[in-house]
Length: 152
Image (tube, rainbow, N blue to C red; front, side, top):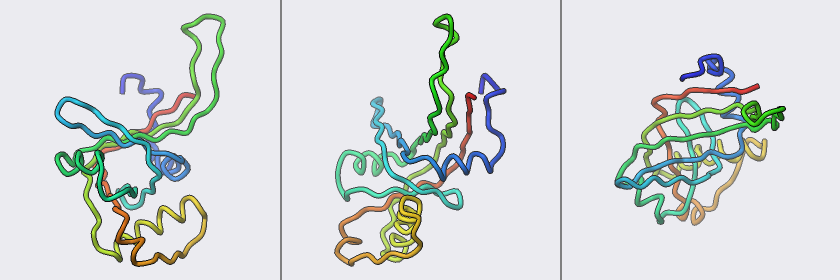
């Protein structure tokens, strides 16, 4: 990181950003064409989870190339200045890299979906109809590297 004073080195602070951010952007690549999508997500034990339909561009790309980059942020406020070059934005963000994989087994899907539901609802336990579990694809990402950045 070029501006080391902005680097977040505390793993607890990085985890707090991951737990409180509402949206994760997943970046993939197909040949020389990047593609990025926003998803709801949850993170636990160096794994990031999201769910989606069983088919589509994102799935085709992940099958061809499992390498992903992800980004989450907690926006702050606009910092106004007297001149253009001193304007900015307060924020906290995390960028990471990893390998995506598809979760096929119903029990593992349920555990990942429980993490997602707990994050957004605050509740602990959920019931999923078998046909609903069959229709959804849950994607995990083995996080290989992450870094945090802040502008306060």
